Image (cartoon, rainbow, N blue to C red; front, side, top):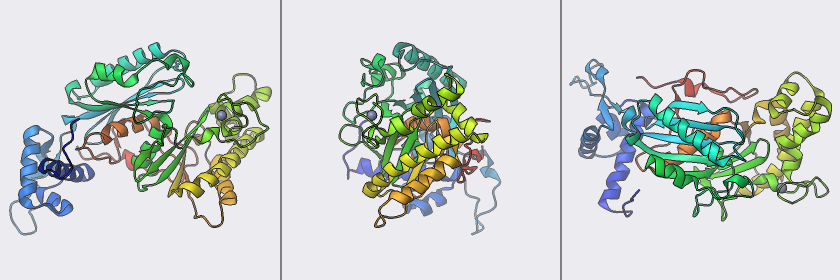
Length: 425
Ligand SMILES: [Zn+2]
């Protein structure tokens, strides 16, 4: 998308427009006077911007504005404006290890679709996974009132480092069958909109910092505890990629030099000690060969001492690594997400205690919270990534319009019902 030179009249107008739209997105409905008050823009500017947005169909006058209370001055009641939900939307796609997930949100910040594929060998079947994702996107567009020509952008989460300057998915090291695939080109060609690709842990971080438990924080460190371990750094509300797109990758920090060989080729990485694959492997001798992360969590929830011990030991190792990371990054909040996060208290308490034990006394205090978004963090992060590239779009919490779409996590003390509060229709 073409951007105007900073400082030009056009860029000033674009910024003012984004500020006016942000008021509508935040409040759901607002009068021109509200927009003037909240943005500090002049009445003339707001009036001209609103006329333009009404003309483009991005903003509508609300049908219920005919009978609001009279204005305090006793004049004519103010007409309320709101965003036209169908005036634009965003697609998110998440290529997980075993499922594909597709979500659509409109520009008013309502989550319209959150769909999951059946189980699928995503890592080893790139072509099949892409075909499944393409079919899911087209079904999701059909289900919503969003016309495909109103799609403003798409984001895709992949399980590999993604560099800012080469945003294709090209890490054969992690998913061999994807080595030659350019995800941005694949979807860009089909959707005809800009497609932005991000690492799944980075996008999980962005989602939690935008829509989830970290939404009131600007500097966040996110840990994705799944089969493997990933991490994401959010600085001043944006993903920090690092030089090679690998910032935040704590899973391959060596914690036991005499430990097991890791798939990265090193020995004793954090992932070999605290990753879901390592934990389930440890339980297979007792509980049989088909142990999964979900079963491990269920076992711990029913009081199985071995399962709980594994989780607390894993938390101890993660907390020790986090002590080093917090000492360097000094985040406001540490968020624990991924498939192991629903384990709740045993894991969270162990991480918190270990972090407090190992952090330098000269450092600050670093609160640790479980993520709120569960398995949809990555796909919502993909939507947030797409939104962040559209100048008019504000990154505000999404309102969930899907019944039963929330995935409550055990032990999440900070879970709030905010997402269930939908805007007035
Ligand atoms: Zn490793």
